[in-house]
Image 1 (tube, rainbow, N blue to C red):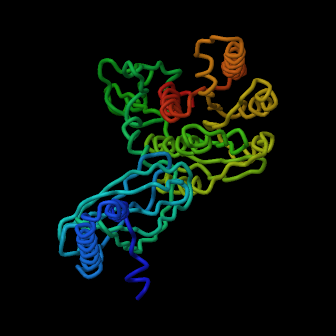
Image 2 (cartoon, rainbow, N blue to C red):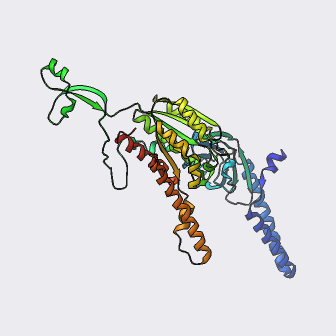
Image 3 (cartoon, one colour):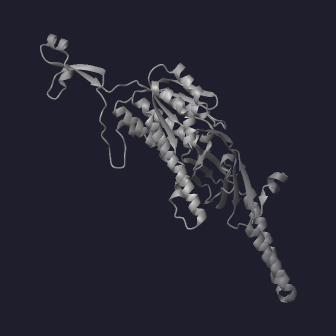
Length: 445
């Protein structure tokens, strides 16, 4: 009883203002005795209003109802919508302050929604959250503070709404880039036509010759049987193997806009896998650090995307150096056919690349290797500022040196016949998809 009728009672700022005003009036009446009786009447009136406000809040109807509406899975790094459905079940108009206990990952302690509700009114209130870590997120209860129009007292209602949702790699980007796989390479100036390296040799059908067909494709045996020119029709090669390889070493722990580089690589891998499956290619997954992680064999079944999403959900960054020798040995023993290998990693210096270059060259002898690594955007900003003193000159010079080393890494990889993409984290997905589509168009895989 004490908890119900006293423990949930709170005193808002208006209560202290009114009581403080009464105290000031009593102090003044000490010097002006004629004000004493009017001040007493004001005090009794305020006490009566507080009593009636208490009756309204605790006996004026049922407790408000609230329900949280959120998806079972949230998309990492994207804006996710959460809705609160709140109903006023009291018999008069009230003001509500609604606190939704957000997961601890957000570290947000000042979240509050304020709304006025008429008697029996129901409202839907929406807000957005942006998770930056994969894993389980635990929502707590919904706490509602109710005030009448007098606003002298406040009652707390605790609505049980505990729930746990999982944050998966960014599946929202799948819809965003859905149409890209149906078109050619995307650029700001429009579609870019790419020259094919050779002639596609995947047979589709035999058809009658029409003007404009390649005479080199004439099928003479079918022509003899049909007594009219017949040509072989070829289509772009499909069912090629594409493996996304994710480095989970210490350099992938670097943050950018709330997400680590590993999370950017994971989100890009999920989107790229979906594009590859739509192109009828077989897609697989490899993760590694100082030890071998996930190894999912390439397949083009529709369920493959779900398998990849489930595996990426559990990946975590290691704080140790990545073992590229082990990666090379695993690729040689597990991947028997020539494949496109897309390696998501990061090199901060040319010396760091040269320590692993021999292993990358060995992989590139047997497969088409594409190395994707990241620009340091903070260094890029530092190198673009105008220096006004000696210290800023030194900072700008060092930043330009490191940015230049990134470009040298690209040149070094190209010198050894290894494809490379140097990209900022926010443009990682679109740049990787564009490069994959370019390779498909050129039939370089």
